[in-house]
Every structure is written in structure tokens, then in C-alpha cells.
Image (tube, rainbow, N blue to C red; front, top):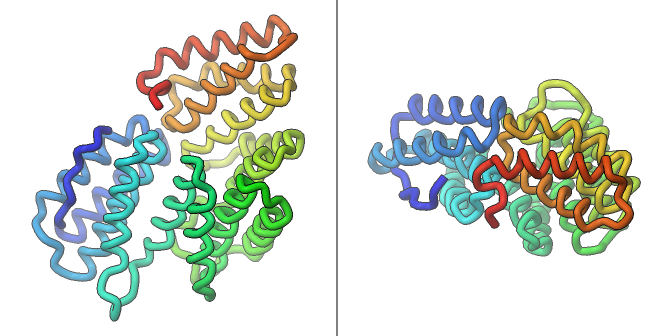
Length: 308
């Protein structure tokens, strides 16, 4: 995906929703590598529709832009993702008397995650905190923002506060779905929570705790979205960083054959880092180095993975 997307206008609501649903389906099943071109084309198509005419079109366009922005994020097209998210946020805010669109918290959730991903945890925490301060959030939405806060706090070295935020997220998730939960929150389940909790543990310097949580998230089974291969990639990196060579080899071996079908560029770049850590390791057993070389070889065949 290139970064020349124009600010869109609007198509009829039905067409905007159809575009969005096609993008969601492609991203969930295949991932951002294959959805990125379609996302940019959808934004361009929406831009040929003229000015936004009413609140319904504004909300539908915000949802389409949010999906395109998410795909750009997972494709590691971060500047484009941010621009699309900010435009979606502007649309979602809408007229103050009608209130923000339902998608607004999702936009902010991804913006918060993007800030942490780009090494700006304080900014991530500010976004999460601003939403949690609203109060009266649906349970699953509140849980998502407690996770965002927990990840940011872990990166800031605030272990007790991070653990408290993640514990609160787990308690909210355990309450089960409610009628107030938005449809877009379907992906937030125990595997998602465990994966992010594992990444928080890794940021806090607890590789053993991180590995246990990431293993549970990576191999939970079920029909989670395609990007969740990220948790297996992060598990490989945690194990390699900690020098747990036997387990690192097992995880990397499982990833070698999967690489050609992986759509998350974020996940592929984490694998590149895991391979690098093995290469820099001391007293690494030969079979582990061989597996890392195999993984590195297939990763080199994926265009754009090494670009930063």
C-alpha cells in the first residue's frame, strides 16, 4: 500500500458497508499483505462518491476508513494508517448533538496500540486513559482499553500498575458478552488477552511468564483472525532473547512452512528479529542455527518485510 490516498468523500451507505465487509473478510482470513491493495482501492472508490451528506454516510465512511487504517497498520504502513485513522476519528466524532459513531472507541484502541508499537507508550497510555475516564463503557470495550493501558504501563516499567490493568481486563472479560458490547469487539477473547498479557510480561523482563502466556495465545486454536500468528512470532522472539534454544527451535520450525501464507507484516518482522537474535546468540546449538537460517531464507523471499 502506498501513501497517496486522498481524503475520501462518500458513496451510498449500502456501498460503503459492502466495501467494508469485503475488506474485513479478506483481512480476517488472509491478512494485511493481501488486503492492503484492496483497502487503498476502497478508500479511492469512496473518494469518488462526493461529499458526505448525512450522519449515516458519515458513520459508514468512518467504519470503512477504520478498517483500511487497521490493514495499513498490520501491513506496517504506519504513516498512512495514522492519517486514515485520524480522518475516521474526525468523521466518527460527527455533530456533537448526535454523538460519536460506535466505531470511535475502536479507532482510538488501534491508535493507542499503534503508539505503543512505535515506541511511544506514554502517548498510548494517554489515549487509553482518556477513553477509560469516560466511564460507563461496555464491559468488553473497557477491557480492551485496560489492555492498552497495561501494555503501555509495562513499556514504561510500571509493573504493578500494568498488572492491575491487565487483571481488570481479565475480570471484565470473564463477565461474558453483554447487549452493550459493540459488534466490532468480537475478536477480543481469552487468547487475545493472554497474548497481550504475555507481551506485557516480556516488556517487564519476565521471559518465562511471557512465554507461557504467548504459548497459550499462539496455540489456542479456534477461528481467530489471521494476524494472531503474531503471538507465535513473539513467542519465538521471547525464547530466542532468553536463550531457550530448544523451545525457540520448536516454534521457529513450525513457522518456516507458514511464512508464505502469513499476511501480517508485523508478525513477519518479529520473525526477522527472532532470526537475528539466534544469529547473535552464544553457544547456540547447530540445529537451532540451521532452523533459524531456514526461517530467515523464507522470510527473505517475502517482499517488504525488512523495510523499516
